[in-house]
View 1 (cartoon, rainbow, N blue to C red):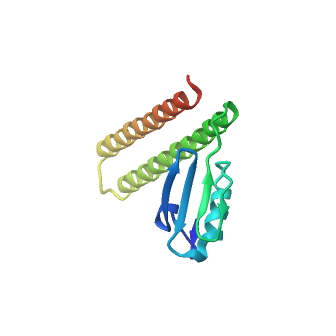
View 2 (cartoon, rainbow, N blue to C red):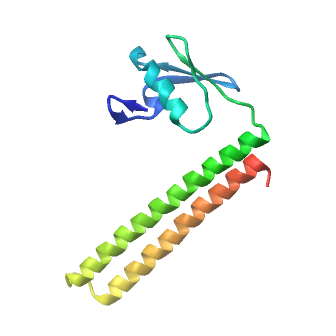
View 3 (spheres, rainbow, N blue to C red):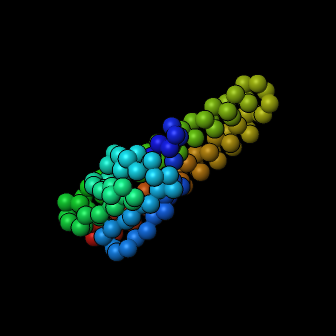
Length: 144
């Protein structure tokens, strides 16, 4: 949620409690933020429908139907793709820095080659980690 125009996790602007397995209750530290919390939860794309009673925001969790499981799986795939893109961006930045060091004659070609290889190895390892986590979560959600 945006807390005074700063993206802030819900857990940092409210106390979260789980009175039963189908409900989350968010009690904001600043009661004037109730509407913003409710709006942020609705905009999260998780299919949650919070209710504001003037003191707390109640967030009922929908039952895990087959359709809901597929929605959550799609959300996991989206987050995984964003993670892979972030890792690739870091690789791009690291490769650009290595090439600049070579161009400025601060490192020899052999060191640039070793650096590029190491960056690629790390990129592959992190993307594999993301893929493994995605498959594990899909297995939990869809029973694969």
